[in-house]
Length: 162
Length: 192
Image (tube, rainbow over all chains, first blue to last red; front, side):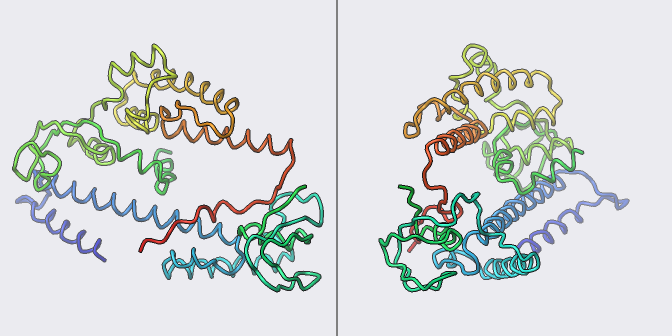
């Protein structure tokens, strides 16, 4: 809204410099106004690019964190951005449901249906695809790859290879 | 086609930053109420004939409207050209202008100057070779001093080469393939 009022002030200035036969005269007021106008457009571009690039990051988050935003990210987003995430997530979910294919798993080509993991953060009791497990901190477990993948993605578990 | 290219870069952060670089410009007209641009006197205006340094985004628009004429930034002067001819790989381009190539290309498009193109090409070819060699041979933990000489674009190429070398090594040696997502990156302490 501040933008629009700055634009209006600038426009009025440009109108003032019209000559006798109503054609705009390119005098020093005109160029001054032009420079102000270009500065406004530049600022707008910077702001737009900022919002746009943030939106791109938010979209990519959905492939990592499923539906729920981790708290330390959520409190850095504006309300509009949080809505954006929710809507994007829902759209993606309905697409996945239509395809009947889990798109957000196996982001790395799988070698083995089970992998060995170490739990990094205390997660507690969860229902995995074939069992109830207590994901206690420091526990070393054999889990189904597809179950472990979202936790590893969020840094809550790490894969062990030895 | 020109319009398409410009629109495609509208949101590109590197393009925005590159256009913030200063270039010298001579005003062909006078402009009121923009005294910030020319702080050599106290009036709030710029006189025709004043020599100033403007950010490229402003200079190029004014140049297209024939309000200023844009000259070459210091990073393309004779001295730099000599240094590039002598030993391109070790010229500290980052210090002169971190957006050396991008700016050079834009200025050529704006002024139609033909002398800069070959300089950019020579510099890039020599330096790119160095960048690739260093990226593949240095160990993963040591950052060579020459990194500080690289422009923005070169640094990106270096990172890309490094990360693909690292990926290659990892693939050969095996190791955990599932990783924490880079989007979740480093934790920053919240500002109190």
